[in-house]
Length: 378
Length: 207
Image (cartoon, rainbow over all chains, first blue to last red; front, side):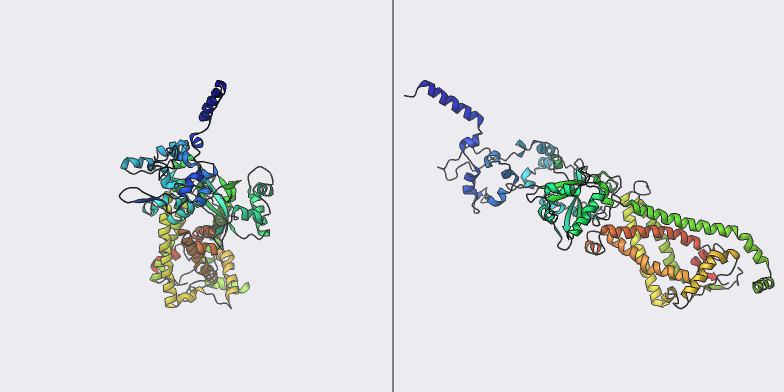
């Protein structure tokens, strides 16, 4: 017979536990348990009329996903799996509810709510988050290039060639400017510089770049930022270029215009894209205000270092130039000197012509004999 | 200077057509070029229009350069652009002296214009550089900047887009200056309008 006092303590403990610990943990449904079945690459389920759906999860790819990195459990997303019943052939119900990403990603959900992609559902098309982001292998996008981001997202559905013929240099814009730079006008934009080997056409990883400089992510700014203001000035960038030459690191700073990965990226709408060339191709353009040098970490994230905007107008960035937006003022000064010099010569010569008109008129009035005589005397 | 009154046919038809297409083309390229480069202070066109017009006119000027090549090389008259190596230095000095001193005294031009010897040594050197180096360089860099992505390989071979753009911009300022200087020098005929008329009629008065 258990004493009443002990029974009470046991029951109270159980109540406290059931409130304090999430249900999944109580059930003990770990990712490992799920992967016992779902790591089988032949695993499929029948949807309807004999159509099969792949329900295999690649463990290695999942291991590097942001959700795994943040210890998100399978059942945190698939929350309608309450417990696993191994007495059944399939230990949980076979038709699961749609995963609601907004449960965790509230700001993204809010931005997406009033976007053209969400509104498309009114036309019978459903574009859930995973249509773009995929299911189980969502990774960091920060270190991705314009090419990778476009191919991973927009170009899956859109054919940009169809609506951008008006651009004077369509392919150049697609190669150097991320879609959302124009199509999500409220998002913060960056000129993102990365070090690239022109011979192999490959970007240096952060580790490779830092190794060549005998430093690390923390030490990089100590090495470059001499005045310790957390901004790489033109003079400091110049020193970095010479340091790279000393270290025999032959490459170039490749520039692209990308957006900051933030919830507002999802707020893409019809008719609000920037179409005015002047927005970008002007020295006063806000598109070039934020310049950063980016070193990838290898997990999809990157360490970014702020650069002075004037760096864009130097010849140390020989491979990045946006018409008007990053123009070199020195050339304008040289051009002005050309024009002033030319005008000065013209005016001086014209003045001499006007001033010497009487001399020439006098000469024209002389007879040929006089002219010959003068020539003989001289 | 007294005129003999004799007219000589100095500018054949194809040369006059080429010259005026080139002149109008280059003036339009300068105007649209100014709009493209100084979009924050110039508002002749929108930037989009300016770029499109600039590209079209650029190709017309390139095609027109083909007409110049075809005519001068086809007829063998291209030799009028090449100075005589043996006499180029003394003749150049004479010509500089004439423009900077003698012409103000009413002395005759040391160079006598004929269809076979149209240009004085200074003109020969200037036009040789213009037609064989500067204009082709402007056309090549212009075409590369017209399609940056497609011509990325060639742009990189020249040192990068900023280098290509710098060449194009400096030449743009040079040509803008040239238009003014050339127009002024064209007033140095036996009358201020004589060379202008000749470029329309083809005939210059012999002196």
